[in-house]
Image (cartoon, rainbow, N blue to C red; front, side):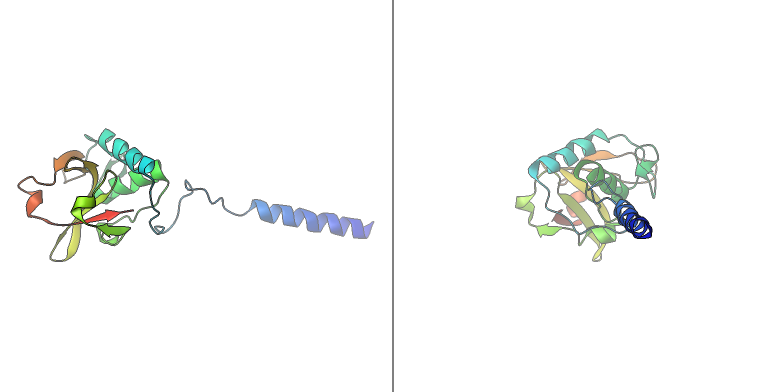
Length: 163
């Protein structure tokens, strides 16, 4: 009888240990950004559609939800997590090295545009096609759609990244 109780106890411990491990689904939150995963074209399109749908959301420094507002990296982080299950870096400094660098002619929807000044990333957005990108530009503003070739953005140093 004592041997049977010991066997049952050991079995219960093994079952409970298996239940205590964290799920590894893409929707699980992560403490640190994961390496960029190759997005499928469908995921890239989902990212694009969601980003366009957030146009008009208020800007808020440090914001990372539609309810609280967005800053540029918060917008990117939120959209990639929601539509592709990918955890993006939460700062523009992290975004400049995220994914794979691509040349401008290779841009497709869902890619990132990362702007820099004096070699340091200072702004980022999500490319949505036809020379346009969605971004959260500045205090007092809202998430908006702009053209890369506008007089302001065309003067900026920019790199393109594909998660």
